Length: 270
Image 1 (cartoon, rainbow, N blue to C red):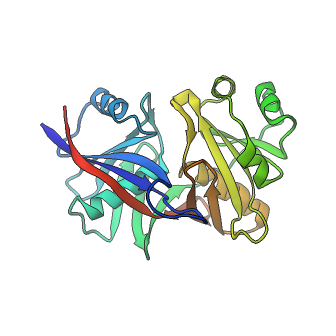
Image 2 (cartoon, rainbow, N blue to C red):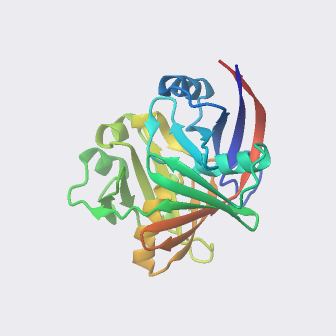
């Protein structure tokens, strides 16, 4: 038996480049019937992407959606959801104006807004944490501007975009104090058009550095929205590949928009 499989770059733009080899690659596997979690985990390991997403259409026209890293299933993944919506519209014969996904994080949706795809995700309000892990203090070389905890991830706010870009991670040390991931963030430089920059590290789940992390921006939108008193924000994830996201914070929801591009199409046999 074979299953349609796609490799899609999600959030492909940065202020300086747009196109192949930017954004975050995700595997997308479109299923005819639900498959065991163990099988999906093995496919994700075979794909060896930060996330591989699996979708299966329900009788009501909506979709079941699950995400797997090479090591574990995750509760929420933004870039792979963007990739799924793109693949369904471009390759899967889907023509619904709004796609609805049933996931471990509840009902999510995607719609087209101009040349971008907009995801409707749950907001993640970070709470301040008084004690910064010693390993993080060592990596940063001092105290962050602010330190907090979201649903799954820690967030350390630095004083400058340069500090975020120049940070040298140590996967073993980061894994020692995280449950899922660590977000580093700072204000965008004046005149850049960016409200924030960030990087995301999740070695605990097999991702030393994620190129672009949609779910982390559910937290970043809340933090920077409060700090800047803004509900519409422009964000860059400053990984080596880079990615650009538009965020609209609406109370307990965050609308995350970006572009996607198909890089590979094929069939998975197994």
